[in-house]
Length: 144
Ligand SMILES: [Zn+2]
Image 1 (cartoon, helix red, strand yellow):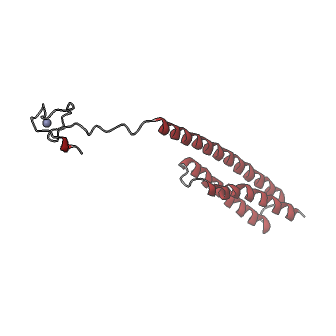
Image 2 (cartoon, helix red, strand yellow):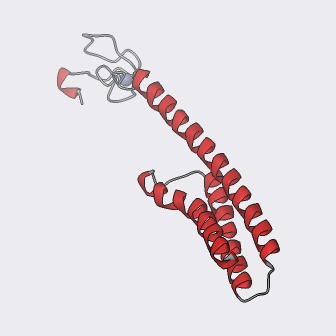
Image 3 (cartoon, rainbow, N blue to C red):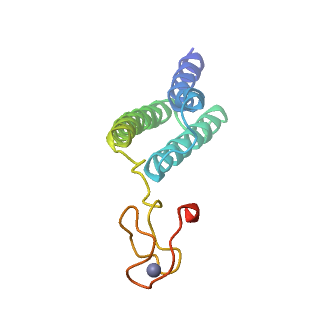
């Protein structure tokens, strides 16, 4: 009977730890280092929980110790998960802000390639036929 309880607890912990990995597939792959670090920590908990379960099934860990440690793992995993989700929320908000900024910034300001001396790159007034800086002939066909 305690065996069944222990197995259920282990399954619960593994579900908590593993679930976000499955969900993460929908999110963009490039997550920041901080989130990756949290994921690594959670993977470590996952492995620890597996080891603990194995130890317990072979009788190296008492029922009480097993359940206490399992509870500790579960709490750690839940805390990590919450932290991770907060980070992802912040990340999403930043992304939205960056996109908003991009949308409002007129990036396509006309490049001033229309009236420039082909010889010395002096900016020329419209309609001049000769560069005032270097004296080069400026023709209409010199554009582009
Ligand atoms: Zn010139």
